[in-house]
Length: 123
Image (cartoon, rainbow, N blue to C red):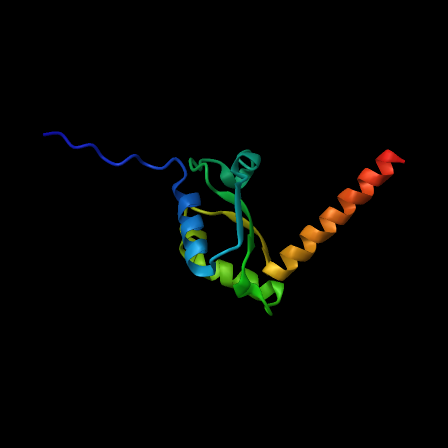
């Protein structure tokens, strides 16, 4: 009888980040970008073998309603405390945290701009 181990994820830190953010914020939108390759040549990254050190995330959640941007960042940082404090895990994290209402307004504005550009191109 042979047993095979479950496949190991190629992105364990990103997977942990995604799982924790979903559990904590039940996000309407969650996009996680691994930007580590853009920073691999930096002096601080010399000798680091992890390919998951620099992340950028966009998250919208009802839980951010009424919070200032700084409080939203603190809440995300609290959820990801282990990944941020542990050597060899996340070195840098860029956060864009918005409420669902703010996301809707941004989407509406983007549609308005796109319509204006289309009208200008047709003129």
